[in-house]
Amino acid sequence: MQTDSKSDNLVFEEKWNLMYRHSAGPIVSHFFRTLKEEAKLVGRFCPKCERVLMPPRSFCDRDFVETERWNDVGPGGTLETFTTVYRGFQGLPDPPYCFGYVLLDGASTAILNYIRGVDLTPGSDGLKALKIGARMRVVYAPKRESKMSDFWFEPA
Amino acid sequence: MPDRRTTRGVAIVGTGQTRYQHRYPNMPYRDLVFAAVNRALEDACMAIDRVDAVVYPMAPDALIGVSHAERWAADAVGALGKPFMRVNTGGVTGLSAVQAGYDLVASGLYDVVMVAGADRVGESGEAQEIMNCIWDPFFERSLPLTTITMLAMQAVRFNLKYGADERDMAIVSARSHRNGVLNEYAHIQQAVTVEEVLASASIAVPIKLLDCCPQSSGGAALILCAQELAERFTDRPAWVRGVGHSSETYWIGDRVGPKAESDYAESPALERAANAAYAMAGLTPADMDVAELYAPFSNIEMHAVQDVGLCARGNYMKLSREGAFDRDGRIPINPSGGVLCANPISVTAMVRVIEAALQVRGRAGKHQIPNVHNAIATGCGGDHQYFGAVVVSEHPAQESR
Image (cartoon, rainbow over all chains, first blue to last red; front, side, top):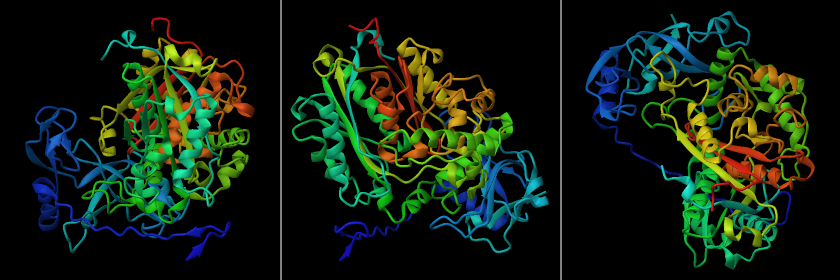
């Protein structure tokens, strides 16, 4: 049994170790299958507000109606916001890395993913050019597994 | 909406806090709750038997490592033989619990309601892992979203939209830390300079280490009482004059681009929450003498001050540099040191209400601001998604019975 470093109290160590299997449903499944098989991103169209929602969803929260059809989006897009991380977080990738929201051409809402192909050394020319409004493009992984890591963004 | 003029007035007649600190080796979780409840009872000169019902604020229970820990803590909050409910809206949990308690009293259902809880964020060795798990499992979980990276991306948009920079953020941190030195309950009671904040390590651009809140443990309690009974417990209550909540869409990517209804640079839901609270109170932002705004990172205060109407949009940076939000400024912001000096997550937003009440009651000790008549407290939760506001005053509403 451990004791606390600053007092004589006993310390009881406990662990949570939980596994889940999240069923994705037909909309999310179609998005990731299309991504894997066709190297293409698709969004869902809301018939009422006429937005193309990314990530795709079965319903539009603004209008509270079901989305109706698939629209192709990208591969070009506009950077809407991003951050570069230089400090490690527990359970997350080793720094440095950069990721952000890109509004893909043809989509009405932005999707998050890693931004690669930029020198992340503080003050680099690549970082200076990385701004809200910068043009980006989708890059697809050569070997895809129906995961978010099947694509990322790079400066166009 | 119910006609608030037909409901009765509600007073805060007692508050209690423990000192916030990283760990509490001598006080397990239940003892922190018990201590805070007893301090509030003592403040109200009240016995636990006088409490009719209990509202328990509790955010992610994984932070303390006991699932549904409200069960474990129910005895410590005096719930035996009484109605008991848990409230959870993430970061705004504590303020949502105050609104739930307010509604129970204002409706006439109960006369005296205890709102109390605690958190022990410093005790989990892996608190970060819990925050890594709060995201959509299909599109977001495999990406490095955290509460910090999410709000760093908010700062990037705000700073571009309003011409703010990392120095403006550092000014917020320096002011909060300066204030925290005067608050005996603050976790961090150490002043930092603007230059020290700017020189601290980058965490997620543009947020630096000293722009971030600490991981705090501690308990807090607040007693709400019907107007007709309030004078039995105190001669100087704080009156809950207005409450409001509103929400944004879950999807941060929906809050950018030409089709967005709101800009992630700021929070229209916070504006709606504050406006609802002001309207219910019959007061305006200009009537506020102090604000306790939930801001776990420096940049959040910057948009929050604008969103709750304490300055015109775009004017925050100029006023902040001029000292308008300092203790002796036009409208002191977070004289307690705010969330940057203590973040016991489950009760953090309730502490904002407690601090607003202490200021109105003239009981804030060394961090008391002179002549406070009205104050606003806010909270933010979810993925910068749920927002709440409470307006407290030295006077009950004229139209209340």
